[in-house]
Image (cartoon, rainbow, N blue to C red; front, side, top):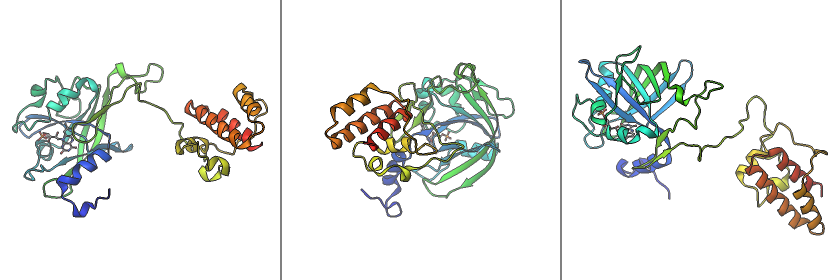
Length: 296
Ligand SMILES: Cc1cc2nc3c(=O)[nH]c(=O)nc-3n(C[C@H](O)[C@H](O)[C@H](O)COP(=O)(O)O)c2cc1C
């Protein structure tokens, strides 16, 4: 399917964008108006965009129905401060409840059943139940348009952050992703939850330059068994590995014995075995298996 955004009504392409640009973290924003009335609403057009200064952005969209602005946006124009509470699974239903179109001046802390706790540097209160709270000063509001669906981009500087000790990794004082069940928004009613069953790690190429997929031997690069992910793992080495004479592996020996007279099948078997090893993140072993095949 091909969609020309410029020629499609926003009500139609809106869901394609929401489902494709996902999952999005949720900024659960607490603001106040000039009279001190508190507002609490979720926004998933949200991200961290700078470390120093520490800047986050979120976008409050003009209502699709009539193009009117939302209370959060109005409050920010009156009092340019916001507490961004990070939404996790324990609070997701209440967070969703708070997104109802309550009348101006309604305190969603009360409606959604959250506990207010004072912030230290800004006036809007924090959600006590959130495991991370960011106190922010609004630097700028950039209007992306005046019509229905137009975002009003809030650019805010994080002044301080509060982190609940329960989500810290004991050794390094870092946030442990297995302890903070983050939730994120997709399209429609769909959300996703981060937990130990769906987290995975990738060794990132940091200080050294990887060889890249184009430098892999042709038989590996054109393998009908190895996937794009497999090639990405193999190519993330700083130089083409050499045969390691100390590498010894029973399964490799068996493949060699069994397929001694059939090099084409042997290559398939070796690639399948390397794939298995890569799934377990055993990149060195996978390379040794593949190099053994290269030298047949
Ligand atoms: C998870 C979630 C994410 C949302 N993200 C956005 C968003 O990024 N921008 C937006 O304008 N509205 C978003 N909404 C809708 C607002 O939360 C909703 O319009 C809310 O009533 C605004 O409240 P307010 O008028 O009190 O500011 C989202 C709702 C939910 C439940």
